[in-house]
Amino acid sequence: MTQQFSDTIAAIATPPGRGGVAIVRISGNQLDSLIYGLLRRTLLPRQALYIPFHAENGEAIDHGIAIHFPAPHSYTGDDVLELHCHGNPLLTHRLLQRAMELGARLAQPGEFTQRAFLNGKLDLVQAEAIADLINGTTELAIRSAQRSLEGNFSKHINSMAQSLIELRIQVEAKLDFSDEDIMVMDYESMEQRIDHILQTHNTLLEQARLGVILRDGYAIVLAGKPNSGKSSLLNCLSGKDSAIVTDIPGTTRDVLREPIQIDGMPLHVIDTAGLRQTDHPIESEGIRRAQIEMEKADRILIIIDANSPSSDNIDIELPANIPISRIYNKIDLTSLKPGLKKEGNITTLYISTKTGAGLTELREHLKQAAGFHAEGDDIFIARRRHLQALQNSIDYLHEAKGECNVHNDELLAECLRQAQEALGEITGKVTADDMLGHIFSMFCLGK
Ligand SMILES: Nc1nc2c(ncn2[C@@H]2O[C@H](COP(=O)(O)OP(=O)(O)OP(=O)(O)O)[C@@H](O)[C@H]2O)c(=O)[nH]1
Ligand SMILES: [Mg+2]
Image 1 (cartoon, rainbow, N blue to C red):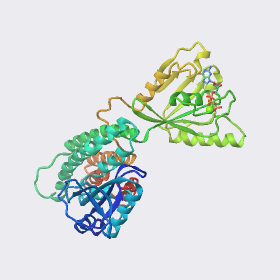
Image 2: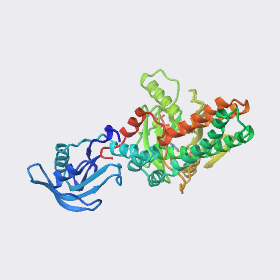
Image 3: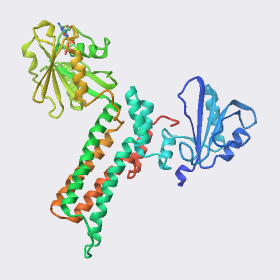
Image 4: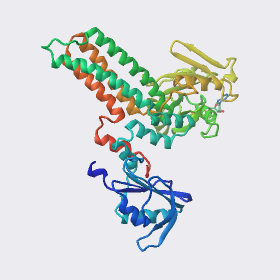
């Protein structure tokens, strides 16, 4: 055990403010003297006891429930003491103060979970899932975080890493014992193995993409010419009058975002200034901001006034790599029918924000575009850093295939090692200290 986490940390684990009960949590390598100082007695492991919590002069700060979880059977893997007191901030602060008099220091945000990780109680994916479980905004996001916490995501990563290890053993054996007559896999079989590992990577990457949407929300930007009905659509989708709607072109100047959900899928709907050539400094700034939002979007909905034929040629360049759907609005003023049309890669929808026609099809389209299905039994929560690491591993595996083709064992071994290392970054088996610091600092206090 390192000095870094052998000191004692303490924090209020419940949210700030008043409530029925509040919990002060203390974790350290050796809590016996702290327990004796606070409770004037010893505790049996994991047994709740209603007793006074003492100040230095023997006076009771409060009466409450104390539970001792001796190492290693605790959340952090160290000794943990939980004090359940009455939920008054003055009491919790006095208890915290008392714990510090007895040698504890204030915990950093996420430090309890960081210790659990460092003590091998959970891997990095599971630690992140705890933060996502606390912050989840839809039931599906919560269930998916629970799946990650139970190890569904880590299990896939570990099994892929295991396949890579088995392959690396073959290649390393060939390198180390090149003079000896040992049986190793031929290049064709190795390539087949790499292909199989690549397949599992790609399937997992798709699942993880959905997990990222569940955590971060699918960002759709409403863009188009002034007066086409972008703000009206934002109001329809969010079910409230968030944006100002008028018949004056150029009404919206600023970026406006509303969080919504469709069958448990979280979305950010982003309304922007109408796109047109203009010399007006405020409107130009609005258009510049619209362009920034479009570049960051998961999908852009181009809103077109179906009653104004010139409305569909936007004379502003759109980002090339973001998928687009074309939405003809105001069909109530035309003879067009509501619904969806697909031509090649381009999806066109016909709607009216005034009558609500075509909005069900639009919601369904957004779900499908995100690859989302409502049951979500196999979705686990994931983060963008996981996607990046998976993609890095895939890239190294492609390189490995190339080296396999030219029979370069040394470079093949190196590519496979790098692929395995990229996977290790996901579960925290290979992770730089500064990245760990960043991940755990995103937690709330007391967790
Ligand atoms: N008939 C009809 N009118 C609509 C529909 N949707 C929007 N409008 C009207 O079109 C006008 C412009 O609507 P907005 O939602 O403000 O349009 P916008 O695209 O946000 O406009 P800017 O903010 O100026 O870029 C308003 O008068 C709306 O009432 C529709 O489906 N049918
Ligand atoms: Mg508007």
